[in-house]
Length: 132
Image (tube, rainbow, N blue to C red):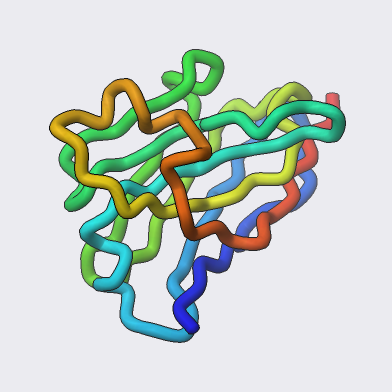
C-alpha cells in the first residue's frame, strides 16, 4: 500500500530551524508527483490548518500568512518527496505536522489548496515543539 510518511520533527528553541520530509512508502514516488501536495498542522484543541502547498510539478507554491517568509515547501520530482523547510520558528508553530496529497485537478488551486477536504492521502504526522 502506497503511503506518505513524515519525518524531521523535533524540539527546538525559538529562532531555530527544522526540515520536515514527506516520503512515499510502499510504492513509486511518481504516484504522488502529479498531485497537489500540502503540509498541514494541528495543535491540541485547534482545527487542522493548512501551512503550505505545492502544485503538480512544483509550478506554484502557497503559504498561510503566518509562515510566509519563514517556511519553504519544495518537491523532489525524482522520488516524490516533499520538504518543508521551517526557519525562525516560534512557539506558535508548535503542532503535529501532516503531509497530504490531493487527487483533484481544478483550473486553479488558489481557492482550494488550504482545505483539508480536497486531500485524500495523509501521513501519520510528525511532532514539532518550539520552546521560548
